[in-house]
Length: 345
Image (tube, rainbow, N blue to C red; front, side):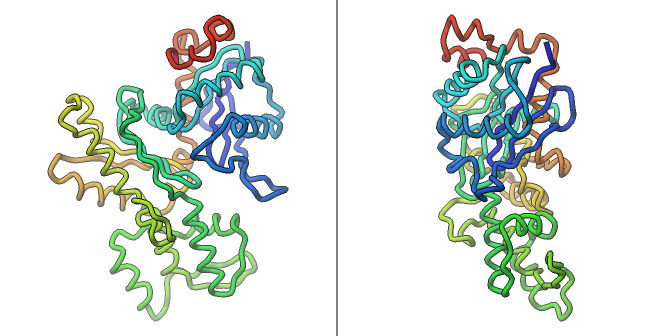
């Protein structure tokens, strides 16, 4: 049988490749080049139809079949038990997968750095999901879903450029964001300094060669992740989400082991690559943690941040007897039904 296949259904990117490699072989945008629309219309409430569309999109683009090897399918931490059962149905009945393991993206992201416990902050396309993971299991009661993501930062920058007379596509603004935007460690002083400089330091070259002084806007757009109100979004923001998860872990009814989970925070997702985001989160988390001890915030390298969930799935799929012990076979599915994934994965 061929080596296991690892498939990560991200909100803006679908990652696909064989286990054992450090990076996915295929990275497919969920945005359709033909329609400029995303495969997922709403990544906070994914239906079986949306999953099916995403899978078909990835498999067609890469000429891949799922019927020849075990499959590690990585899904959002926000998936319900019904969602997981539907994914199993899709894998076994539509794509004839011989063996399936369903992995949660926040958990496999931690696996990518050799950890099984911690708080994971995943800055997705339209949402930021923060959750506590203990001993390889995401804790549903701790999950915080913030209705702000990387796309809001991109659109903020796009609007700022438009107000300066530069009409650029969202894809172009996304590239500019990742290359030039940065989180301020001291937002007020740094934005004032940027506006007061007689000669700005950060002049951006647009695709048509135009030079635009964007220093202030590049700081303000990144602040959207911390303060969603900047983009007109009524949501709590990144640090408040981490704080809520920490409070859940520190609840007096929780075990001592769970109270240690907030000692490590991992930030992943495409927009976690924004410069200084890790340092800003570390500073703000340190302020939250003054009364309960220290905390380490990790943002990995740029590539690892974007593909962490896939990399973790690749690592565990290579473990001896992993699919025999953790996976669900087609026979298991036929005999027990799709609920078997809730017990095994």
